[in-house]
Image 1 (tube, rainbow, N blue to C red):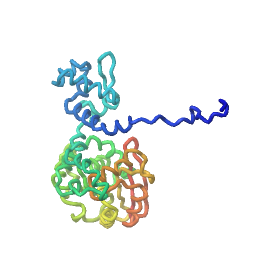
Image 2 (cartoon, one colour):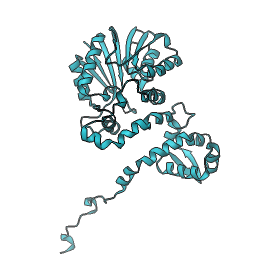
Image 3 (tube, rainbow, N blue to C red):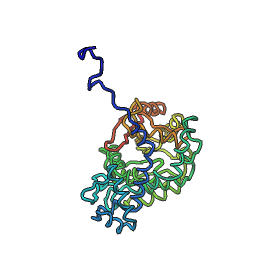
Image 4 (tube, one colour):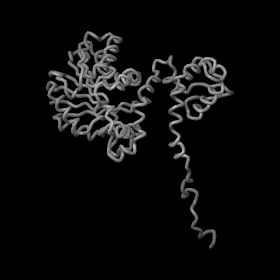
Length: 348
């Protein structure tokens, strides 16, 4: 066969080389998780941010072995959380912003919730969750679960920007009009508190388990809004919320439950709203293909592992639930760079 008649593939037609590297990375992903947790616990990022940049200096500042400091920091360089030049380490922009304890945007506390053993154990049983379509353990949705106190205390820094952006959306031109607001599953309380800070004539009733509301009350005092902040302990499915609300906030809650349960709750909230009142639902919302964007799409797996019937709902599904509950008008707002989106639904 002549060279001109050869059927061998051209460079542009060649298939990518097969490699087990992606599989190897996935299997060992826990190593990065624990490296980040260790660096946060030992204040490695804070030490480097303060100028302790060599293994000797980091070891001295953090009270660890020099060999330990070197190997951990090298691993973090390889994974993009530090840089290294002439045996000295420096923070990346992300690490300086979110992992240096002296940064106002510090988020290192989130590991106390996200890496909580009671949550991580669910993934050891992921195969069973896949078999049965959900988790048998109801820890994530049971009454007075202490994990939600951990959530309220440790995740507040991560939710600060999202709460402020949500307040901008729902307040808009209502910066002075008196508003009666219900904040369900309030947790740390930051979403309701952000509304109070944006409108001095608003009043918020926050619903959650009593042990969690202790954290919300602390934050209300911290931001000076306690006079306009009322708490209502209990399950939002059971408590009497009253009526006459202008606005209901549902931050990061519907994903814990199935569609039928959510629609029942939304009908209850609908009756509590005044005509023209709105519900603002903040969620991880994947596209209809369920594989984009990456963070909202992968959140569904967390719900599979941790809840009996929760999910990451698409915009189409959220709007359908709202319509079945009586809401007719909807506004959808992505919130980049946050992975969250907000659906605002109105009672006509």
